[in-house]
Length: 440
Ligand SMILES: CC(=O)N[C@H]1[C@@H](OP(=O)(O)OP(=O)(O)OC[C@H]2O[C@@H](n3ccc(=O)[nH]c3=O)[C@H](O)[C@@H]2O)O[C@H](CO)[C@@H](O)[C@@H]1O
Ligand SMILES: C=C(OP(=O)(O)O)C(=O)O
Image 1: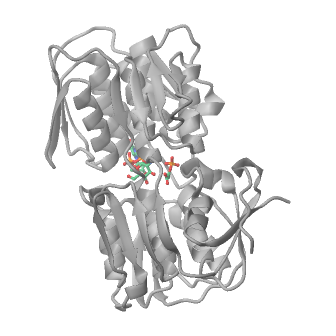
Image 2: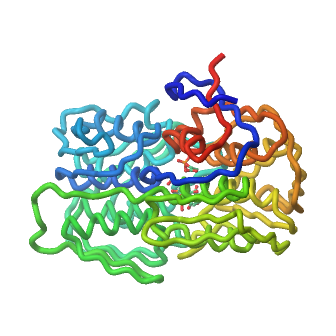
């Protein structure tokens, strides 16, 4: 199959089939799930921020549009299109368009910036992937601890800023390590200037990149597993701040699983080793040699020795836990490896409901113990079929499965895949995958 590069927006499906082992070197984009809160953090500080390594996926474009709709100015230097400048709000814009905000889950990161600029935030319920209930009650508890008022209705929610100002420390302990609620607390503290003591914080790389950004903006931040504290420094710097979006750990993990499934050897560049440690552990458990050094994730599946050991992939919000978004690509890989493997994701309770029926179309036999836990025995030999990217990671997992499924696999629903990855098929092609974008 000839790989033809067509402008992404034109393709209706991606076709993929087995070919040679993937080899070579590829660089990941900046992380979508870190870029989204960093863009919102820039708006919350209401200072000039230069954010580098911003990925060109559609969720990030949506967030930039939301900033523009709510009065922030954004610019991309022609010489460096991966950099976005975010400039203070002119406070003359209407609120975000509900239909734009409803396209992504992460619109909730904008609440603190909107409270700082307008004293009020009205947003629709989180959109994005349909992967189960996405509550916000912990976000609301955070805002209420800052004295804000929250109200909800069928369409969404309203947060109104506290009427009175105080410099008192805000102390909150989260009942579970929610990433979204942790970032809400950090950004609300940044807007109000109030010291924060956050118990049971989420310490994922995405939260830590916001912590790093606030430190650069002059905040003192201490982090331990049990508590995170944030204190404003009396004389914070005022010039433009330069932040960088970390490399996309999930894109790196996805490419690593793709290389491994084909028995290839490749270098995946631009990602912090710490961010992919749980993924590397899972690859090794499946007998795939993998390691990280100096921002490069190396996979040497040509030397793989299937272990037959069971993989227990349980998504977790705990520090160092397996990010739920690593699970779908790992599942596509584990299907081809000997052993009886268990996958559980209670963080995104609708994910298995998306992914498993699509893998079944390729002939996968997976036993569902419950809606969030399943078990299967590999190796399984899949057959190409027409499948749908019903969420971002289901889409990327199906591309990995298509690299081994006999015949051709065609993946539709590309708008989901592109929400999270600007050009995953192009990166797979750069490693030698037999993949092409097809327009009718
Ligand atoms: C845009 C983005 O970065 N999304 C990621 C983020 O989601 P998200 O920001 O939703 O992750 P959280 O850690 O906040 O939430 C974990 C789970 O708890 C639920 N919850 C959260 C807060 C709340 O007040 N009530 C509530 O029910 C969420 O809907 C989710 O099902 O982290 C997840 C893993 O941690 C990833 O799989 C998502 O890809
Ligand atoms: C679930 C994801 O995204 P979102 O929460 O933005 O839909 C994801 O990034 O895989």
